[in-house]
Structure formats: structure tokens, C-alpha cells
Length: 378
Ligand code: FNR
Image (cartoon, rainbow, N blue to C red; front, side, top):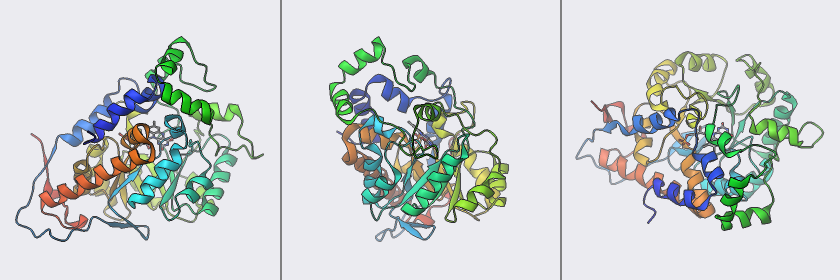
């Protein structure tokens, strides 16, 4: 029975070849941060307030003039097409049906225009990586604008790639060359192998070098995360010149950076440690949240991701001042397990658990969830 997001992880593990599962599941170096993200969330307790009238419930929130069905969304995940052909579109459609936003990665495997038109009426944001050739980013931002993306999310925690040891051991790089171990992996996962054989190897189709072409070198550079290391806060002006919609930065942990982001005119931030895939020895996002909430004092929405596995985790983040939480791996486990229906099922789990937790806490509206509902475990 698929009763918790962890059940989807178990199914993803059996359906995916090891090198794909490890790409999703893995993190940097000793993989301590990913554990911290989860255990720090779990170690917070919720203090219910009883005998409140919760007959009427409203889980919705309003962000940048749009209504979300609940304060949860899907974080950008590159290479979703490797998990399942058409994965990006499936994630977008499942989010649209659930009434929550989906953030498309720069490293997606489907054209951003198609993802948007395939999930019409939904909320899609575009995550941006800025590589050394800034013309690539400029072109993507222009396309996102004309396709109607609702927000631009600049990821700032990848000046270089984190050391993902599982990927290195598995030989996971572009161009992909299957070794003996990978071949055995492919043979023992025939459903995945056949689906890929029919779909063809997924490429980073949104990368274009200005001539409209996506070169193999550029694709390899994106997989190796060769970014523009000269990017600074001043560079936000350049982005502002290209994008007049909501602009967010993703990957902040330091309260001073949050203040700096605000001073540079961002419309929101995402507190994130990239799901533990970058610097391993950083704090969990939930432990970094309170100082950032205090620093920003309600002036812009604060989103968070990293380790959210249950609706009650989302309630805890809201209680500590977040506007909403994004989920990365759980959505991908749903995608691996059962395509769009699997993603829809994981989102439903989050939303149902969020609803039940709110009621058990004595909260009818999201704004009723307050810091006094959270108790630090001693
Ligand atoms: C990511 N993440 C990510 N972030 C981003 O800004 N651009 C990207 O292309 C990717 N790609 C990516 C691939 C995979 C396989 C994973 C697991 C994650 C990070 C992602 O947006 C988010 O910050 C974390 O996934 C949140 O942690 P959880 O929910 O996975 O624990």
C-alpha cells in the first residue's frame, strides 16, 4: 500500500536502475546534510490547541496574485526525463491538477514552451542556472517570458557542483557510456530500459548556444554544473532587465544573504541547501529558517525545501514563518513509481496530511498556524 511518500521511494528504488536511483537519492560527500534536513524536521514537535471550531477549513494561500490550493509545490529537478520519458510534463500536469506550482529546471528534458502548454491553467515557474555563456540564460528567460512562466527562480548555491560520490562511482556523466555494471543494471530493469529505448536518450533541450543548437559540450557542461562563477548580487540587475515578473533566489541559508537579496529587489527567496547535494556540512534548512524569517520581517515570501516528506513537515515550516514548502525527491519517487498518477498521489499525500495536521492542531486557516504550535524536542 502506498500510504506514505517513503512507499514511493521503495517503489522507485525497485523500478529504476541503480545509477538513476542514486542520481536522485544521492547527495554530496558524506550525505550528512540530507539526513539533517529530515531529522531536524522530525525532531520538532507540534503542540495542538484543542476545542477550536475547525468545521470550515481553508488550506489555500495567495502568492504573487495567484491562489495555491495548499502551501506546497514541486521543486526544480533536472533530468526528470531520465526517470521517465516525458517526466517534466507529468510533474507539471500533476501540480496543475492539484492547484500547486511546479518549478521547471534549466536542466529539464522537455522544451519549456511544451511543458507550459501541456499544463495549461497551472502555475509554472522557471528555475535558472547561469552558465559561463550568459546568452544561454538570456534566451531562456526571454522564452519563459513569452511562454507565460509566472516567476523566475535563480539558483545561487551551485557556483561549482557538489561532490556526488555515488554518481562518480556509477560513471554517471555525459556523454553517457554504459559499463559492465550499468549493463547489468539495464538488463535487470527491463521496463525502464525499454521505455528509454523507445524514447531515446533525454537531452537538455532548453539549452541553446545562441545559434539555436544544443551542443553535446554544453549538455555535458550543464550535467557537470559548470556555472558562471563571476555571478554576484550585482548580476541581479542584469536579470531584472530581462524579467519584469516575480524574481526569486534559491539556495540561501545565511540571514545576511537574505537581507542582501531583499536589498537587491528580489520578490522572494527559497531557503535551500539543494537537498544536501552541494555543501554537505551546512545546517538543515528548517534550522536556518528562523533567523531568515527574523531578518526579512515579512517583507517578501520565504519558501523552503529540503527533507519535506510529510504534510506535518510543511505545517512545521509554516509555523516557523515560511510561506510554503517545496518538495524535490518525493515528487520524483512518485514519477518513477507511476508517472503523472504517481506524482499526483504524492502531492495528495502531502495535502491530505497537511489538512489533517492542521485540524489536529486546531487551525482552520494557514494563517492560524503560528510559532507557538512548534516545540523543540529536548
Ligand atoms: C535537484 N535540485 C535542483 N535544484 C535546482 O535549482 N535546479 C536543478 O536542476 C536541480 N536538480 C535536482 C535534481 C535532483 C535529482 C534533485 C534530488 C534535486 C534541488 C531541488 O530543487 C531541491 O532543492 C531539493 O531536492 C529539495 O530537497 P528534497 O525535497 O529532495 O529533500
